[in-house]
Length: 366
Image (tube, rainbow, N blue to C red; front, side, top):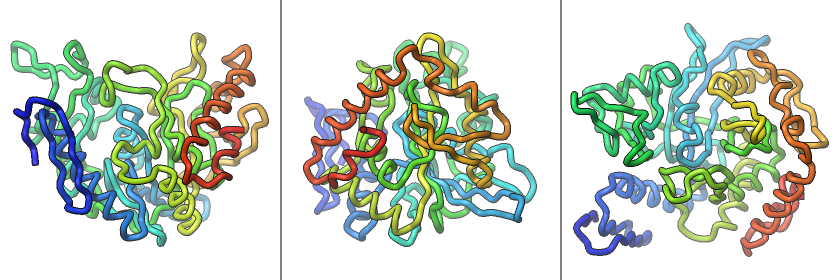
């Protein structure tokens, strides 16, 4: 129920009745979130877990033949979740990387990932370019798209780079306008989960153990954007599951996530789509993330536990020089800074009373 003329802005949720009241706001995103929140609630009642995540199906050739991989991307707004979910990975012919679902889905014990959005996507437009995101760009300038909070010049042309009034430009685009959209919004089986962050202390990618993955799920680390809280844009942020739609105990969400990835035998990774280092830094560009994801899909990366970072990182990634992105090289006191961060993480995780104790003491927090 949407009542934009209400005097105060209030969101009232009644999950048992399946009703959300959006008062004092005409933002389309609130209507979208109300349905997605309910979708997640009902998934939990059916032994699944709702995820703020995109999904894609990758079909790729390897040294031993064709491989089909289901990938899940978890991240807050503006971290690159939609970009990487929709990206074709530069694959052609029999090889392909197809968008299955963009924003919210549900993981079940057998590995099935149920989708929630049938007809389209609700994307962030600030900085959108044809060069970096050709599929999304073309769909956004289609006559079928509906734009919101996007700057329009006197000539009637939209400007995706103008954030003077707000950086939270949005567009509702059709799946049918995306050339690599799959026929179904359901992913038959998940094989890999990627937590997307923008943390200068993190490498472009690290492989996680199951317990580390559950801890990363609970930490939900990234950088605040205008899509979340415009007044805190650029500041570090933690959101459990990178998911602002959770109803119920957040500690139980972490425990359930651990159970599901064990049952479904899903590999988990954390990828940094921001930069490595602070003042003297190295940006992780889209092409770097794509090269990493493509090689992980192939299963061609050899991993090694790094004592300084405390996680497993690649020895080599085809298509980029991974050694240029080694975080300890960009900080004078990397171990000290990382140690302080781990202490903060441990303190944060300890606040969740129903969270399994072993998840507060992984290498991410110890």
